[in-house]
Image (cartoon, rainbow, N blue to C red; front, side):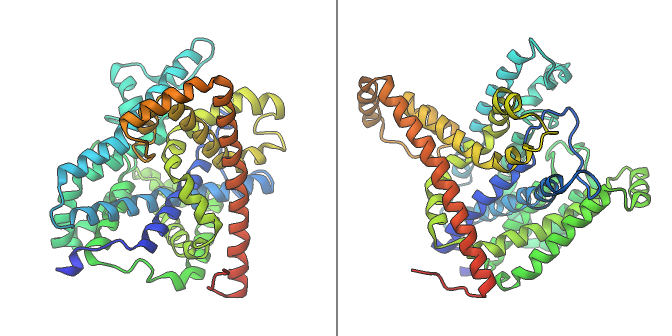
Length: 434
């Protein structure tokens, strides 16, 4: 029975925290606003090095990150359910608070902001003709509408996977040989959101793989020594995607289209996500144990808010500041905006949550999904009263100080961690400096 009750060790928890941080930051690359009404198609024949770098980050780690996050979520859900005395309803309640409530909050805020903007200029809300269309923008009942809340649909599917986790756990424990291939086929061949239960079958398939790893008691570090192989395969897969976007293989693309299939989703993306996820996971040990990990621990409570709010906040910053000053996608400086978007999103999330803590601590708990621990109720009221007595000036100073520390500290630690990991990779050493 011991192999059916996996225990998450401290080093695995730290690794999962690092994976979440890197994956969310990489996912933000996929959603950086650029002022264009049509999504950028990245290929090897479009633009110069800047466009290539964008495309590589989007089609590589950007798209692989959602799969890895889903695997991790499945692993954690199964580990929870396999504990003696665990309660399914307790799991549902915790995930509803940590996933659905923040999703609804940020979707509603985004909807209201765009509703105001739509009074003076066209927005994606114009495509919402029916009541169901409007509800889908917030709740994603039957589809993920293209627009500013689309990324939040990932959370909807993730929660559905949590609801299905007892059935998935039962099926995988008894018939993994049947369940996983069936879910894999659903992922590969279902692309038009017609399967309403799960709008993105990728999430369900990857979530189930995480459950399988927990059930089997798999060693999560078993493939670490193969990181060079996975990194190379990930690079090759990403380059093939960019090559296909350049027009190479149009015959195959058209052949798949005639059968109602998308060549990239059926053939290219599965390999890219597989090798990309394995590359990210097996590279993580090189980033553990240093100052980068300390900063990851410090800012992990803000990560979920950064994911939920990043598109709205980046859009406001882009149209309100960056674009008027530096220009849009066609400007040479756009690559700076693109590369800084994940860290800007994190800094803004820190600022928003800090303000919420100062004004209304329960709001900070809501928008972070309970990930930010606050003081007890009585202590919170007393502390809030004291802070208000200090005045707006002192409060503003605290906010600015927190924002500056978030940006400068995180960026510097990220750079140092990257150079430290690069040095270890080049020297072939796994030892850490004291």
